Length: 386
Ligand SMILES: *Cc1c(COP(=O)(O)O)cnc(C)c1O
Image (tube, rainbow, N blue to C red; front, side, top):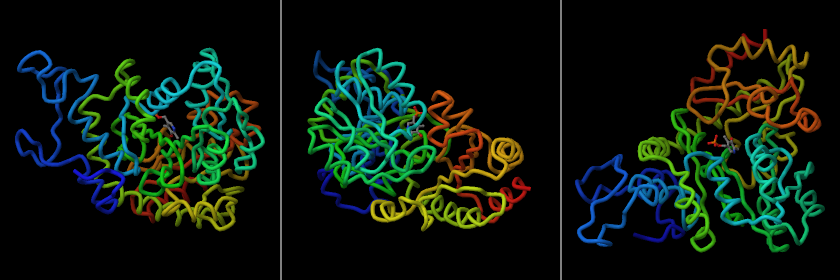
């Protein structure tokens, strides 16, 4: 088999075939769900590469190989959740006393993990409110061992310049990790732009059907050796059925992302001029402050839109209970459209003063635009806006 970084095929082809050759034992065209915890050995140590399913499982290997090839990395490691993947990066690559530099607009669960789990463990984290690379440059120090970003960010959809921040981190001897959950590897491949590590909540676009929780870490083999050790030693691995569902989702990632982006772009254009909408955050809009960078580093602008209505929190509360196709639910990236209230749902773990100062107040609404007929989605929003 060719090396992942050689990229013999296009993205959609890799999504369907990478790591997914016919099953060597049976010829099964689709990677089987290897529901086994253990593997029979001919003699002690004489096995076929698998000994115990925490350490390795063929369904998981297929997923890990596919994810590595999609992100253009050498190695992929799958985890039981996005936060298990994030934990493995922090524990595998950092030690107490190290410093992390992150952008302030961050998934609430990642903030909680850094604040409530890793701060007591001895990691200190600095957050930059200014998401430009100058903002990072002001806070980076020799103690900074890891720069951690999302782009587009959650929930304000800020765009961060991956290449500029990669150069800055490396200039200061720090590792650079990108949580690529919001873009998916179809829209953006951070390793090609200089990132050392990519992290995913595969729960979102990669799985794509809101039916499985999972996470992944992708990067160079040597760098990820301690993360792989931690994966086996601590054991936060996904089961084979989870890996199967995620792989099945990935097969249609390219098609789904094109539709998510097209639907969201159309709704964003319409919402931007709607009389009830006070502010809209969508990187595909020409007046979004990160539009030019997004156009450079992303294939298209993704399926996430955030907005503020005239009438603030009260108007938001009404809107959230009125949509019918957009379900009021946490999470994102599935085929179905979701609406979310970050202040009380996904970002409730961030202290109120901190949240509000960042613009994540009770009036903020986040949409995950699905792949339904866009006319139906627009009608649903029109109705809910009243
Ligand atoms: C959901 C999410 C996570 C956490 O992933 P889980 O699979 O829920 O553990 C991390 N980062 C981002 C950007 C997310 O949206």
